Image 1 (cartoon, rainbow, N blue to C red):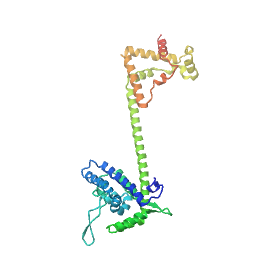
Image 2: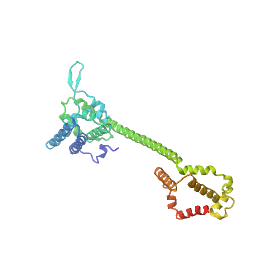
Image 3: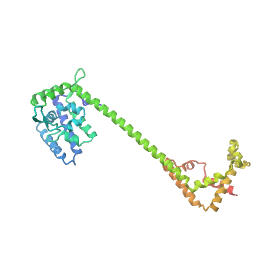
Length: 341
């Protein structure tokens, strides 16, 4: 993953980076507003904060810098850790050891919108995006020194010390300045772990989907075979096969003679494929005469079977014949006509 530091082709000054951060922050607020535009409690504060930010930027280019520094810089470590619970369960008031209560400073993403409220209403994926967007804002205020260590822009540090010295979290801000290399590197490690976790999850989903499809395909095949057993065609074939005595067709047991009977049917004299086909045709005719079988019913069953087979396998059995230029269905029918004589 390419960091915001690596995206900068040249080292920009604090004043040059401010317009970039302003644009990104406005987009950040717009994205959150779009997410919660139908949320009764959040839409109002978010609309107010977006309008206020845009209006104030016209007269104060430091508006966004002041907002994120005052509300988010002191807790940047928890943001980089993607620690939603840290923010969601923050209390408005904290009791000191002496028993007195003091008002806790809750991080905001604008003038009115508490970060804890947004995170509480967000799913995991959107919470991760919020954290990453905030981290990117601060990352743009950093650079790498000659030792490849991440540090904050000196001009930004100077600006904060001059304007936020009285901030109640100023000591925490200084700690973030001193430890920004470890804090941001920890964030990168966390993002890499998230990517690996997402990839593993995708693999698991793919495996489960494949297993489900295989089970479905297996069940479909089993249903097809069970249905096939109950057809008139299958019953007819079963009845005929039970009557066939292979001893009556010795040529069928000799591969050489069997191939010869296919190539030259007139040479088949000692009980080969032609005799077997004559027997089958005779049995089929008898079934039509004595078992009240209807030719149209059998043809309909055959078409249904081929249709179901094609749906199940994606293969059309008739394509074997359609794509064979040497195959002629009329010739095939003639064979049976001659055998009946």
